[in-house]
Length: 193
Image (cartoon, rainbow, N blue to C red; front, top):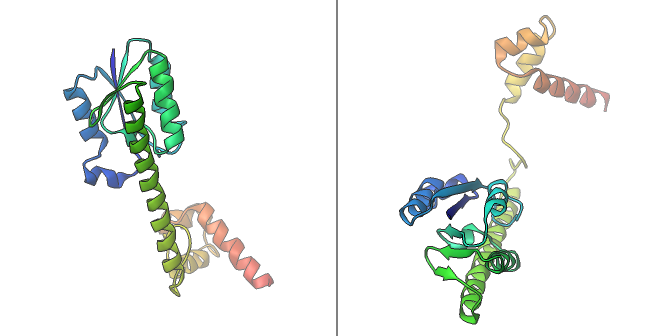
């Protein structure tokens, strides 16, 4: 049987032509009978759909993938996975490379591609860290998610709590009870200091 595997790690990849839909279309056009798809980082070997796929593959089956970096983003992990599949008698067909086997030239090609995938991932991490360092220099920098409610909205909701229940305030403001409790506790800690 011919199985396909597709993976994205970010929603942004949909704009780059790497969307799950684009990968699945290409896999079907190349004969994939059943496709497994993950929205998961390629660095982790423990991906739900990949794990399911690896469990159903048998000798004589073919695993198809659009690009090698969709299977793995590290040289060691990717090489080990491909070697294990080939040793189990499973054909590995990477659409932009061809069918991989255990010949020295095939090993060289996949190791080069995996090395580039790992290099690219390391560059992404490096750029992200540099961006964070630049952002931290701004006076209004705050780590984590942006606040959903302004200080004024929280203050208003806390004032409403003096005469209303949490449920009533939640209905009036849309601010959840747990957010109100955290804000109230924070206010109490500040007063205690």
